[in-house]
Length: 135
Length: 125
Image (tube, rainbow over all chains, first blue to last red; front, side, top):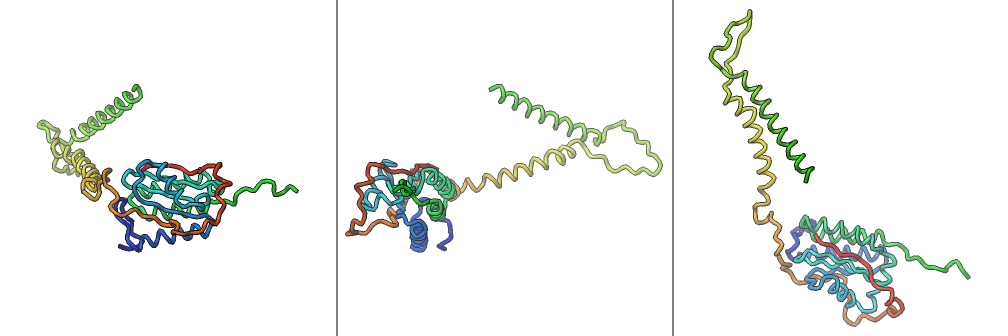
């Protein structure tokens, strides 16, 4: 299967497509300095499961952005750590989810993930640091 | 409810009007007995079209075209690959990209931001 071919949601990804996702994760991390994780699999309890997956990152979870996709229940969860949430607003996450679900609905899992990660990294802003101008 | 009724009655009026107009157009083309066969100078009338033929041409052909278009739009959804099956499960192993490796040192002090909470969003498709 060609790297650019759409992967129907429900089919496992090929090694070349996994590589494409890894490259997208790496590019996003390089662009904004945050840690990105992609999880594709069952999310039995929805957001709670996604938050537990994020917590598995340990100390780095506060700077991690997790994109969790459950193709069976057609659920997408974007969870940002405490520090990451200062750079990636919920509005940005909503915009990214809209982009990704549009691709997922068309059956393109890899393309949706790449577009979502690119959008999040592009919109991640420098966190506001208060009191820098005071002595 | 009232707006739906109004829309439906409007649609019915359009259909009735179009059928009536078609019949009006097709009517004069019928070869009815007792028709005026007086020819003017230089006039050459062709063979009159029967009512059935006119109906087939002006109503039947558009209906066939519309049915063909409908078929072309609906047919892909009838195939197995075209049908979105809600019960299709993820057949592959759980995919994790960017997961932390075992033994990764805790480089950040996570205690200071725990009270801020997480963010993000949820969506379905």
